[in-house]
Amino acid sequence: MHIAAMLSPEKVVDVTSIASGGNSRIYRVESSGKFFALKFYRNESKGLESRLDKERKALLFINNLRANLVPKFFNADKENNCSLIEWIDGQQITKINLSLLKKASDFIGLLHENRLDPLAKGIALGTEACISGLSLEKQFLTRTKLLSEKGGNIIKDFIDAEFIPLSQNILSWVEKDLASVGISMDDEVNKKDLTLSPVDFGFHNSMLIKKSHLIFLDFEYFGWADPVHLVSDTLAHPGMKLSNAHKKYFFKEISSHYDSVNLFKQRMKLFYPLYQLRWCLIMLNVFLPDFINKSPQQSIGDSLRNMQKVRFKNVKKIMVELRKDHKNMLNFDK
Image 1 (cartoon, helix red, strand yellow):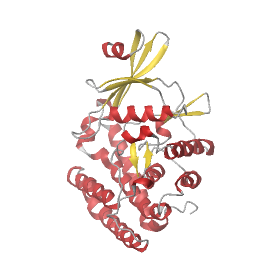
Image 2: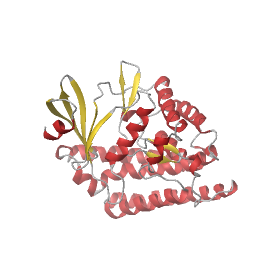
Image 3: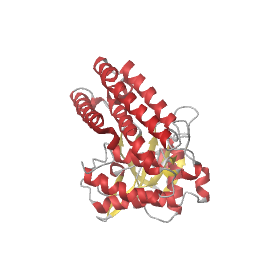
Image 4: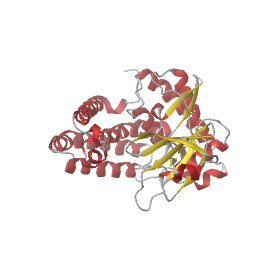
C-alpha cells in the first residue's frame, strides 16, 4: 500500500494482488475511482538494462505516437523495481481471426515506420536480440549445453541423439545458402534495417477492449531487433497458436512493412527454421532446476509433470516437421 500511495497521483483506496509469475507481480490499485497496475519486475542480470526501464521507454515512445495501443505510463520506483501504469480492463483473446492478425501486423508496422523518431535514440537492443547468424548460433549452443547438463537424463538423451544432429544439419544448410546470397553467419544486420520490437509479441500479451480495440501489453524486453527475428519469433511462439492459414496471412501482411530491408525474405527462409529450433529449447526450460525452483508451489507435482509432457510432445512435433522439410517451413500451404 505504501509504494502504491507513493506512486499514485491520487489517494489510494485499495490494492489487490492480481498475478504473480516468473517475470513479474501485478497489483490492481484503486485510486479515487481510477485504476492502475502496479507492476514489480524481476531483477535483470548485472550490466543489462532493467526490465522496468525497457518497458518505461517502450510505453513512452509508443504513447507519444498518439496511437492508443498500449497502457499509459505514470510513475516508477527504481529502488523497489516497480512501475505504475494504466490498468487495462479488457478481455483475453481466445479466438484468432484475420482482423486481429491485421491489427497486430499494423502495430508492428507502426513501430517500424517510426523507428527514426527522436525518442527512439535512447532505446537499446531488445532482450536476447540476434542481429547476426552467429549471435543466434551462440544462443543455441548456450541453451543446448544447459539443457544437456541440467535437464535430466531424458532431456540429455534427446538433446544429444536428436536435437544436436538436426540443428547441425540445418546450420550447415543455412551457412551454405547464406554464402550464395553474399553474406555469412558473422555479418550483422545493417543498423538502417533494424526495427523496434516488443520481443515477446503476440495475442498472449494483448487484450480486447470495447470488443474490437486491441491493446498490447508487456514491453519489458522491448528494443531494437532484426525484423527476421521479430517475425520468426511471432510465427513460432507457442502462445500465438496460429493455424497454417493464419501464419500465411500474417506473414504476407507483416512482410509488407519490410520491403526495404536487405534480403529480408531470403534471410527469413533460412533463419526461420533456426528460430523454430530456438523455441524448442525455450519450451524445454520447464525441465531445468531454475524453472522448477521458481515455479509457484501449487504448480509443483502433477501440474508441472503435465506441462513437461505437453511441451516435450510439442517440441517433438516441431522436430518432425523440420526433419521432413526444413527448407520450406515458410510454405504454409502444405
